[in-house]
Image (cartoon, rainbow, N blue to C red; front, side, top):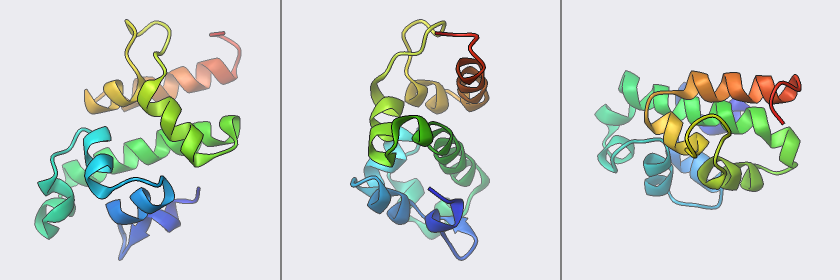
Length: 116
């Protein structure tokens, strides 16, 4: 999943992310920890907070997609698989809580063989 396929006019476009993941823009907003207005109102869509959350979600998905062989399976993992060492929280819950960097570090550690 290349980042360019998710953008429109230099910003992350929730409708393009949703199309790639076979879901809705509203669901993309929810899984990124955003309200529905954040993806429906142009001023909110362009806000730093909205764009940061969408970018973080896409970064996590891009990082794990090669492992699963599919963006859809990576998205299912993101939403439902508890991560070791994070009290049973999923990547989605951590990203929604502003901890995307912790998720990316966890994935790097797993790839390096630190976590199994």
